[in-house]
Amino acid sequence: MPLLWLVLIVLALAGAGYVLGRQRAMSSAGGDTRHLHSLPVYYGSNVAIFAAMPAFLVLAVWLIAQPLLVDSIVSADIPATAVPEGSTLSLLMSDVRRVADGLDLAISQGTIAADEAKTLRADATDVRALLASVGVALGSDVNETTLSAAQEFRALTGTGSMAMTVVVLALALGGFAYAYSRTNKDFRARNVVERSIRGLLIAAASIAILTTVGIVLSLVFNTVEFFRLYPALDFFFGTTWSPSFGGGSELGVLPLLWGTLYISVIALAVAVPIGLFAAVYLSEYAGAKVRAFAKPLIEVLAGIPTIVYGLFALLTVGPLLVKFFGSGGTFGVDWMSGASSVTTAGLVMGIMLIPFVSSLSDDIINAVPQSMRDGSLGLGATKSETIKQVVLPAALPGIVGAILLAASRAIGETMIVVLGAGAAARLSMNPLEAMTTVTAKIVSQLTGDADFASPEALVAFALGMTLFVMTLGLNVLALYIVRKYREQYE
Image 1 (cartoon, rainbow, N blue to C red):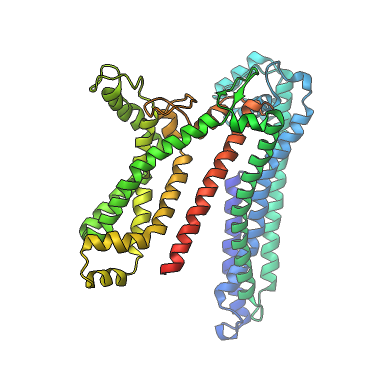
Image 2 (image 1 turned 120 degrees about the horizontal axis):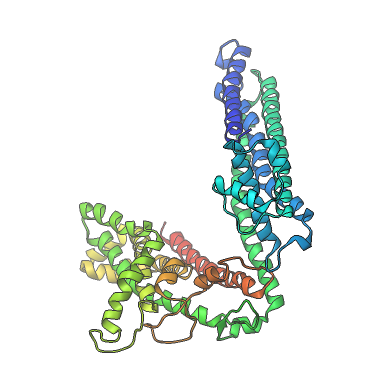
């Protein structure tokens, strides 16, 4: 049964349970709601929850676990000698899944019958032609092992899907019958529904927490594995970044950290003054009409995709800087050889960060009590003196927190750096040279068919952990400062 149909059937059972549960409760009370322990809506909601919640919970777990289990079983049945030289089992399994999907698509389009897919022989030309006819491309020829594994994959997936349908429908019907049978005027439906909702909220919060824990653990385990293969001192204190999947790599992180911090400093040098001045103007000087127009317009910058900023850096800002600082440029110097540079990425990233600084600073400045402004003005201070000597000092902890949050955003940026800063890992003070950052190298190390047993691929996790610790520290510091500010003025 298609997944959409299964979901709709469960939802229909839940809807029917709501209506029938409510009617049963009213019938047991003789139609008088005063004889019910809870409001009628709780009785219907109780049946609907028992019909839907266990079924959807099992469905979600099944959809996550089944592909992992099927992959494990099928890959275990593939002999090591069947993996082509220069390839890996994961790449072979990718072809197995594509062949299985292609056979399913061919069956759905009527190209072959379901029985034929089970007995199909591995004539590479015929099978590739069949799959090409339904738009499936493969990375290698289809041999006997690949086709046999794909047929096993289809069989296990079909069996699992059938079992999932039976189990989910059984749970939905069982929950429906159980809750409906308990429904009467004395049943404490409100208590059960509220406990169920609380459990649902706890589960949602737990998923968010567990996801964070899973991300951290995946970084930690792979980082530990990397340091088993590559010396930690060479990674943290090495000044050369030269990965080579053939061996002999130099994976010093210092050039990447330097590029990351250099670009971030330039970005903050652009974003902080402009964002802060915009926040002061909007909160202290702008009228209601100007503020209603200008603030949303500034915040539009935060909604522009970073790839667009990257293209802007590559096609507009970079060539403009070359026109001034490149060979034959306006100033007659040869400081910049190409459009990619630290300054290019920093300027564009700073534009992207302006709404982060301005919006947060604007909210923080507006939170300063009006009585402090009135007291300063009452003592004879001008408006500008009040802003400089009263408002900004009072809002300073919150503004610092906003700047630190913007800094953590700058450190984690990728697309602007990839397109605007270049790919050269170097230690240089010249802001017009191309450099790169930690995030850009994480992308490059994981691009393509990487072998996760090599330090050249695992280094991406070590870089990610380094970046995670840096941004986490900035976020914790920023949140601490903002919380301290709020406790003082709220």
